[in-house]
Amino acid sequence: MKYAVRSRGDQVSNALREKIKTYLQEFGLTYDDIEPAIVITVGGDGTLLHAFHYYKHRLEDTAFVGIHTGHLGFYADWMPEEVEKLVIHIAKTPYQIVEYPLLEVVIRHHGDSDCENYLALNECTVKTLEGSLVCDVDIKGDNFETFRGDGLCISTPSGSTAYNKALGGAILHPSLASIQVSEMASINNRVYRTVGSPLVLPQHHTCLLKPLNDVDLKITIDHLSLVHTKVKSIQCRVSEEKVRFARFRPFPFWKRVKESFVGE
Ligand code: NAD
Image (cartoon, rainbow, N blue to C red):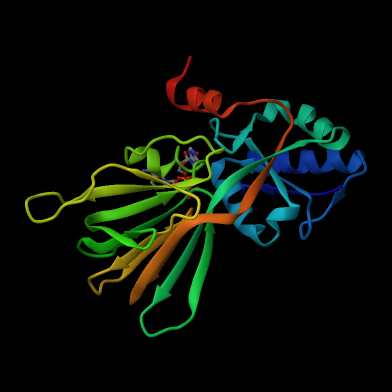
């Protein structure tokens, strides 16, 4: 089996990456950065997000597993002390695959027939560089509301514990093929009105954001951030593609939520 190891780049993570490479080579596995069947990330959730984007062109053929060298992560849920156990699992046992839904984002610009396509593991956020974001929000082809405020966050179920949670969004189990739209400081008064609650949309229910003022937008896809001008629309929906995680032991989602946010 071909594997790759990606590190956050700090000394501890790099040392662990080398240890994993040596172990797996001793077990007869082949290191292959280009076409790995399994990608082991060493660092934190951010490292796994980077690896996901690096290998997003081959999601069907790559499974991810994350080791955290900082605090417990959502994607990076193996501890450095468990590395020996993990490499034996990888080398010797057929692993189970768990698939999580992804967010598809299509950005269209005024005066341009081409569009830009993105995949997010956590979320897409839309903000302005200056002033409020004013945009129509269409759901499944119908106008739902006109949003005015700091911005909007559209997250995946596995991303619901990240930025979405800080915005008061619900935590969704990743078995629910859905996306969640949450508001960032919406303006609500006698003139401007938004629903004020996070919305959870099922598969095939597209959320289309159409900016009404000609302002530059800061659009993030996970850790990636880009400034876009003359944006006509941002289309979000559950992607047909999924991300695959290699599971070697049960670590239920709600247990991870409890350990990260509630404690013992
Ligand atoms: P980072 O390393 O600063 O990560 C921020 C934190 O988010 C880390 O503690 C990480 O463990 C956690 N995180 C990432 N994905 C998570 C998930 N699915 N569930 C629970 N926690 C998660 O920044 P980065 O590496 O550039 O990561 C980008 C992510 O940071 C974005 O996708 C976004 O979700 C998150 N973020 C959060 C906030 C916020 O909570 N207010 C603001 C900006 C970005």
